[in-house]
Image (cartoon, rainbow over all chains, first blue to last red; front, side):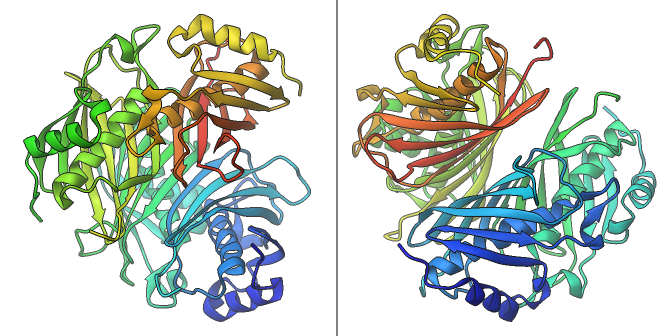
Length: 139
Length: 139
Length: 139
Length: 139
């Protein structure tokens, strides 16, 4: 099953429907059922001790999985997160984070997958998330 | 087991160690192993369609559970989230959210509990979170 | 919203559609959106050290939530578990376990809730589970 | 980091400490931080409609992750599951299941990883589990 949106189309659609996250999460690569997404980390994303905030990582997991879903099913503003389960495993570095999101099941009403998140330049995952999205019937 | 910090002490400590969330999450009530926490929702927490953003709810669950933990074990800046599992069940109203956080297990190295989140004035939960925190040995 | 099946009807239906769990999990009480369910623990459910096996607790969470769902929506053999997230918090005693299952959201396609599990006679929870069930459209 | 137990040592140790699961879950392959484990599915693991029971899959995820952990840290009967979060994605076939378990973080007190489960001969995952184990300090 091939993606039906390009990287540029995914980023353009996010800018259009979620202007408030514009510039924070950027899709960098799309493959069948997979996407790589960057969290642009600035001072507002950091916590004392030079680490990245939990909500920034939650947002990366959520937006990252939404982006691969968009790439596969097309522009669906109404797909909503029903479950997110995140394991925080290592302290992130105070730099951009890279997420590898993949879809494991793309069903009629539910999409399920996971997201591995890394501090840029490291190969040890900082966090792992399982995501479930509900897809509206109008699809 | 009685709380060892008051509502004012919990809020004061959060201001001190996490100044960047100051004013966003406020502890309103503490009881043994329980706390009620408010998310102050402003324009920056809203999403198109007049709903509250996922990262705001994640932050409420995380900060809410941290606050009840602080109340029970005292000032522990180093306690860290190891797992957060959130079910998003209903669309939040565009208003403040109230979290009821409770500790189910307060162990030597792990604290486990859950958080129910409501739009203020509603009795139907918007989201439910399970939280696990790792407690540093220096306790 | 009132239950539409009685305790006897729930147990009878489970015997009919899941004969292999007959006698292992028994519904004892039903209230609106809530049920209390017993796991009958025998030698085959124990592990070395005199504790209850993980699969027995998983089965209790799963069957317990299914029973409260049956009570509320009626006989639906086809409702299926889509997510189960379990925190194991204390070592169970080698005796029957009691589950308190509740529905937090009963939607058109998804039901979400949680289950607290206790060793009989104890008030400290052994385990906590979040459950999501998918409800078939033919409802 | 290299495994310190072989496939035969892992299976032998499981037989010794968990005789009640003997013959049900078999380690087939070990690599650094990874293991492949088979659930031997018989009539007692099936449900009406010819599908594999939830507790069997829970047991496969739990035992599968325990096996890779044993392989990496050596014989540790006391490591215990603290969290298991399972997404059930497809109906399993009535045949053996294969689990691919991997460790994402092997810490001093917690090990975190995930497990993908397949019906033998299929490449579409039936279920996905995240597992957290607590490792006793005596290590």
